Image 1 (cartoon, helix red, strand yellow):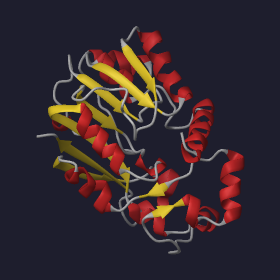
Image 2 (cartoon, rainbow, N blue to C red):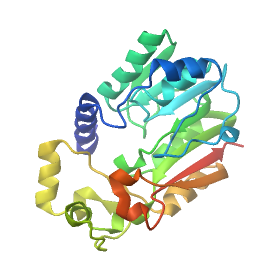
Image 3 (cartoon, rainbow, N blue to C red):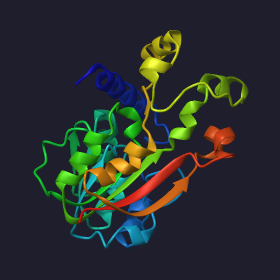
Image 4 (cartoon, rainbow, N blue to C red):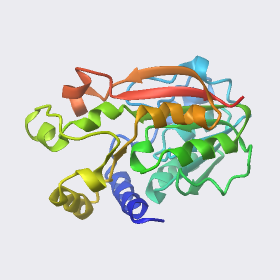
Length: 260
C-alpha cells in the first residue's frame, strides 16, 4: 500500500478506537428490528437510503465497501443478506465482527482497499453499499471500475460521497472562527493544497488525508464505466458538525447506479 493508504489506515484504526460517529456499532435493538424486516441504512450523514433503492435483500450477496464500523453490514446480515464487509481499517472491521459475534450473524470481513477488489471474482455480488469514503483515495475511478466488475448484471451500487463544493473553503479558518473563505480549487488534495505545517499536524495526529473529486468523476465516472444512474439525493452534515456550510448548500450526495 502507498503512503496515503498507510497513513489513512492508521488514522481510521485510531478513530475506531475512540468510538467516533462512524465507529459506533449498531445496538441489539436495531439488529432485532432488522431481523423483523424493520431496517434502514445510510450512506451519507442523516438521510436514510430510500427503501425503493434496495430490493428485498434476503438471500442476496451484498458487499459493504469501505464500510467498516459495525453499522450497515450487521443490519443487512440481520435482514437476511449474505454480507461481506471490506475496509482498510482492521479496527473498523473489528466492530463488525463484534456485532456479528454478539448477535450470531453470519458476516464476513475482508481487510483491503476500496480501489482493489481483486480478492473477489467477477460478478460476485448483487448489491454494493458504499458509504461516504471516496474522499480518502486520490483517484476514484478504480473504485467505480471495481464495483462494476464485481457486480452481477442487474446489480445495484448505492454510493455516498462528499459534495466537492465544501473543499473550496479554508477549513482551518472555518473551524477556528466560523468564517467561510474561498481558498482552494477542486479537484482538491490535502497532500498538495494544505499548508505544510497543517500536513505535518495531520501526520502527527493521525488525521486522515482527504481528496475531493469533481462531479464529473464522482457521478460521470460511474456512467463512464458502464453504470446507469437511476437515483440521486442530496444530504447535509449533522448541523452540529458543519453547520455553516450545510446551512447554505447540501454537503453530500448519494446515487443509485444499476449495472445493465
